[in-house]
Length: 198
Length: 336
Ligand SMILES: [Zn+2]
Image 1 (tube, rainbow over the protein chains, first blue to last red):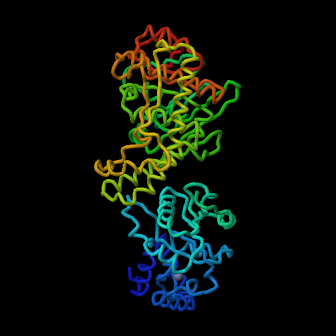
Image 2 (tube, each protein chain N blue to C red; image 1 turned 90 degrees about the horizontal axis):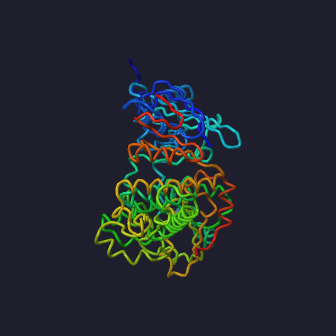
Image 3 (spheres, rainbow over the protein chains, first blue to last red; image 1 turned 180 degrees about the vertical axis):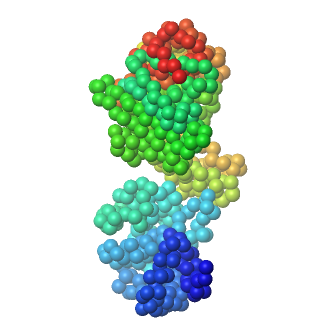
């Protein structure tokens, strides 16, 4: 069977994305062929993303400027810092629209069986950041799993001598749940009902 | 509580078979190899959603088939009946209660509790600590969903801690120790209560086989678990490369005439002890569910002898299912 090489290349590239198999990739390609304006739009945004997307050197979130707009915004210097697991958790909290502080993305949680210790996460720069940005409260917004809880414990111990207030939101969430799958109302309640570390 | 009927499709050696049961003692009979224990196991499967002999699900599928189905009707003392159906296909297990899919398998036990003993339970009476813990954990997890959750969390944190100890990275043990202390405290508390209640039931219940004053159960923690205590053992655990303290190392003592059963009991006495504990467990569950759980015993005659079974098992209240290679004059025969 003869397939134009540009079509073949596009199908193969799309198949590298999660959740996309051969059939879906083919369907997408033939859809795109009928809609050249979408090809243009996609090509431009992919090109831009490739050039500009990076991780913020301060909060380790995804951004197109470094530092990210949140780290640059003096209005977000409220003295409150939310510690989250993944970059996408930042967008989730932004969607809530009630959090006005800054973020610190860990890039995961402690998990020795997977070879993930404190050095594999953005943990070492956290105490320094708390001091530099005069943080009054660190909100731990980690998933309520065994690993999330141990990581929260580790951070609590790490910040014990800094005098900062450490709070947790996950208490109201069901154990083992995933923050990114929690509905907005539940997460809002969990954030508002956060409690200080006992 | 009783099982009325069981319908099997491609379960073990059964192509398609139905069996019907009545009250009291049911004796599953047949030559060796016809599948007596498989039928007993299938009844247990309807309660636990897994094999009472701890056989993995794929091995329960009949040779040449690609799925199995176990269905049964159980009747409560009120006369109400429930239909339980479990299907295993392509590595996936689905259970239905009265036609509605259940979220968690433990829901089956809540409508159809059983207690069982098979020759594979021997490590429990031989003093194998792990076997005794899992014997108790099995029933605790079925009685208390929080227990099942805390135990799973404890095991997960333990795996993480052991990974650190294996690598010698002890400087970050503390947060895992806190997790182990928090989840472990619940595990120890519930196990201690369960052992105490079981002891009470045994003391006040009907005498079953061994004189009850000679049977004692006790929970012996490996350390008094409380916040912060595990850090005191980091050095020792570092040296040994494995977590040495906590509920995964606690002991459940079976004392016979005041001494550890595994040292002083004869083979016969050990099995009688297990049967006594099982009877206590059955009474304890009866208090909880308001009905006597169905008792499943694999080959009790070859273990205890026919006269004992006649004298003791035949006279038990509630429904009891046993297997027997010998034809017996007691109970209702269920030929295969
Ligand atoms: Zn940033």
